[in-house]
Image (cartoon, rainbow, N blue to C red; front, side, top):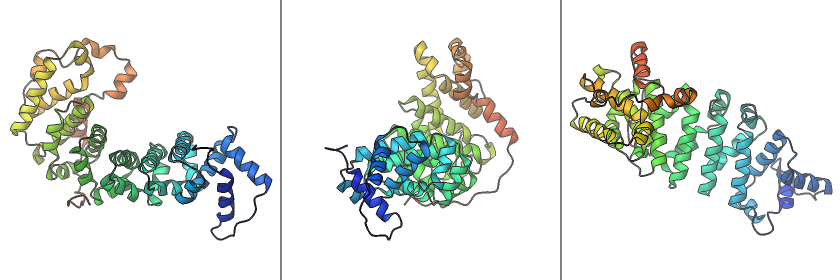
Length: 363
């Protein structure tokens, strides 16, 4: 809190007198003032009551909060607390019923970039693996401000957080996936890939990989928008996760050979795989163990594209003794065997009708 802290008395006065949008101000009773101060400072209030109080604060105009001494740090701290509450799926679903979801969505348009970013971060927690909250956010038109922040916000941190929220919102949510396609979301992903922010690139590649897994028809969209060339470039990135996600995206594009979504005769693709092979061979034992997924992906891509064993396989570098030293749950959670997963999807897939998409540049 700045200086002596915000005037919570004044905030309560405004909140109580304007809760219906019309009533004039009235004097605060001592009981009201005491309730508000205990609510803001105490630690014994139950979660629902606390979320209601935070929701009431989020409804207040920025100018009022500022006039009462509330700082950006105060608001970030309040959103941090809200995020802790909505980690519970039940409480996340209650956020709408207590009147907190719409005010939270309004914070996506806050004048301060830190608040816009934090609001998206809280929304990520609200909708993650939560179909009910995904539906509520879609019905409250929460997708639109998230997409706007992802594509056009001048602050890259806001764009990154908005993309993370979108990714959580549309996963296993066909309505969200369709809205993302129709809103030209892929053009925004392309812009994210060519940014110079690693975290932004990671999130974009992660979502691309998921979308390509969900719909084979999206591979053509990605091809037409020039993603293969960008992913070939990113597969040589200094960041290991960027390389791995780029390689996974390239592998997804090989699933339908007849579609030629990935030009296997592309000299740049071959040069990439040869260069990654040389670098992997030159790695220390410690780096080799850390690059387990990259080793597997380079090997699989070489085999699929050129119908011959990779040099990594000939050198015995695809599977190493250290790969078995990881705890089984860690191995299972982090490393789904790429070839097995890829082959299973390829065998089980059925032809899907093409999905309409606006292919113009992101606005």
